[in-house]
Image (cartoon, rainbow, N blue to C red):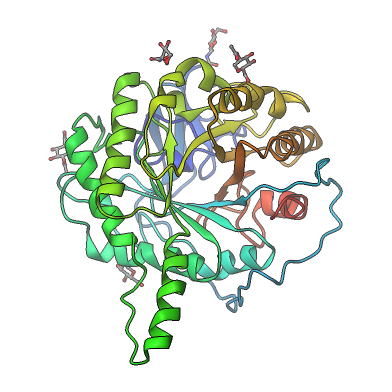
Length: 418
Ligand SMILES: *[C@@H]1O[C@H](CO)[C@@H](O)[C@H](O)[C@H]1NC(C)=O
Ligand SMILES: *[C@@H]1O[C@H](CO)[C@@H](O)[C@H](O)[C@H]1NC(C)=O
Ligand SMILES: *[C@@H]1O[C@H](CO)[C@@H](O)[C@H](O)[C@H]1NC(C)=O
Ligand SMILES: *[C@@H]1O[C@H](CO)[C@@H](O)[C@H](O)[C@H]1NC(C)=O
Ligand SMILES: CC(=O)N[C@H]1CO[C@H](CO)[C@@H](O)[C@@H]1O
């Protein structure tokens, strides 16, 4: 999702309606904007970048949405069969299919206050997705909360502990958790240039996540099996170097990705996939012209996957629920597919979305069908976004049970689950 703000970019998806006062998360300014420039009570029009200002909660208007739902028992085997209106044309599947689980990165106050500025993903709703067959969840967090003061500071225990709840829930229920510093290559508003410190950040983070738990057991046999189980759970964590680098020197983007890889592997985390993101908001549609140099990244474990994002509105930013055409999805990713194939690389679509309308439905399924048809290089697709604080009226909200995208797309997407 495009934004120059490190802090609130995830909240960009909005219902932009022209009215006297804009509603929560709606657009309220930006180049050529002709709609409302003030927000309804409790919301503040916040400048994000020259193209976009957004109504964000005035402090403490958000209350935590502690779920009253009964928790879902998640198993990977109880996948619901679905009579989707749109089935993939290919009978193949992607290795990973899931959703982003946003909200730990929300808010502008850093480190801010839990329950006011940010919250964490809801394990009950994640369980619902897992029971439907979804098997990957990308979980953004803010580096300014995880490492306070400097990027090579020790991890903040309270934030890490809360963040780990969803990670552990996902991996122990057979799905993959993507650990995503949602920082656009920036920290505290400035582009990260200290690759050594960035490597230390990743070394610290990988150390925290490389082992789920200390395995303790009196029985050697039980110990043996617990170890195998623990390794398997461990391998379901995926390290995403950073969300959406943009407007940065390409060499720096390369060096930050390489530093992350070196930090992770150097910490002894040798069995997990690493997702590298590229410049220009890691857009699939611009990948072949902006990020070609990233083909030379080197992972000694050979578990590197290129994470790209693709939205289908006119500027590709994901801020508009209208898609350019019913074929725009496949058109925008074809070049990336060719790049992956030509360079013998693997890719994952880490963010995408389309509005709840038939043009977008065709564009989304066309794009997914293309990924499935090219699953020699495409390993997965992840919808942006679920998360407990998205208003259900947000068109891309796939938070169960009433997010607009959940209502419109959940059954359609279930046809693509592995
Ligand atoms: C604003 O309008 C001008 C003139 O039509 C156009 O060149 C520019 O791209 C527009 N900006 C955005 C963000 O749409
Ligand atoms: C963040 O930037 C502000 C303003 O540049 C500075 O005062 C503050 O110390 C910085 N904080 C951190 C954690 O780097
Ligand atoms: C962690 O979550 C608890 C509630 O479970 C909350 O009281 C606490 O403030 C949170 N801390 C952080 C840093 O997220
Ligand atoms: C790059 O990708 C775009 C978008 O998918 C595509 O239209 C274009 O033909 C590609 N260019 C090259 C040189 O592969
Ligand atoms: C923006 C940028 O630096 N793009 C570069 C990406 O990589 C290709 C090929 O290595 C360069 O030609 C571009 O200049």
